[in-house]
Image (cartoon, rainbow, N blue to C red; front, side, top):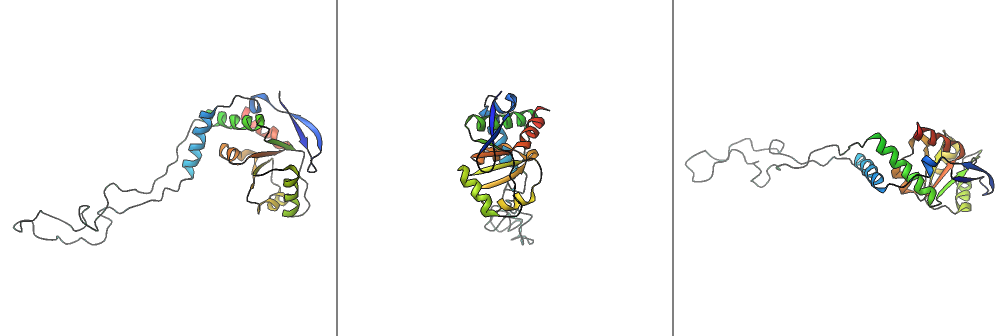
Length: 207
């Protein structure tokens, strides 16, 4: 099984943690990763584009001219799609773009993304992240000490002081272990686990 070094916030190695090979040492399946990321992006689409059909356009209540005798083509309304200012034929309407992929595929994609980060040495484990007061400057000092760029923090429970200290940093995001997802793992270069969250993620994916 792969091993990971556990650091404190001073970048000192304090211990090692054994990682489950089925979660952090699996083969990387890029096809399932693609499917799940596409699903997540589709669910985020607002789908609010809308156009007016002939029944939605105002006006056009009066027949433009009589049915027969004018020599012109018959017409029932000036809001016909054939007319300038008329309705749109088969135009976009509000809709949901969301779709689902099987649960097993989502789990496999998440395992593949975690394994990829582990193999690329972009996964880090912190023993803890003690902060007694909300200080963005102190949080940023730890980020710079490790040389992290765009970092995703995976925490095992709510840490209000820690979360509020990081929220003004645009390249840092904190999520609970149960909210870990493929899109965020790919969107952020480094993934930083608090030690208790590793076992929680493993337990959820192996259940």
